[in-house]
Image (cartoon, rainbow, N blue to C red; front, side, top):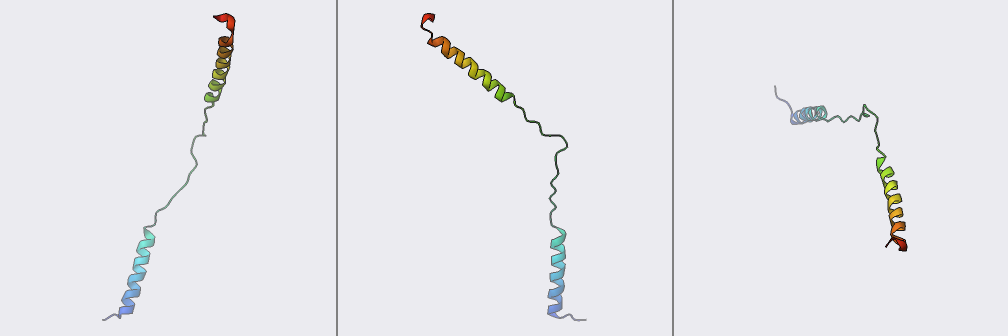
Length: 66
């Protein structure tokens, strides 16, 4: 039984498309299990440094110190 060339081309095209569609990757996006924690200690330390630096500047500007 001989097959025509158009029949073989169409069958091979269908088989190739099925094979390629079976290999498509799946991407899933899921939320994390635990809540996101943001540490705000940096801001508090920064405020303390600014206060100490201002007090030091005021102390060093005092002429009676030396």
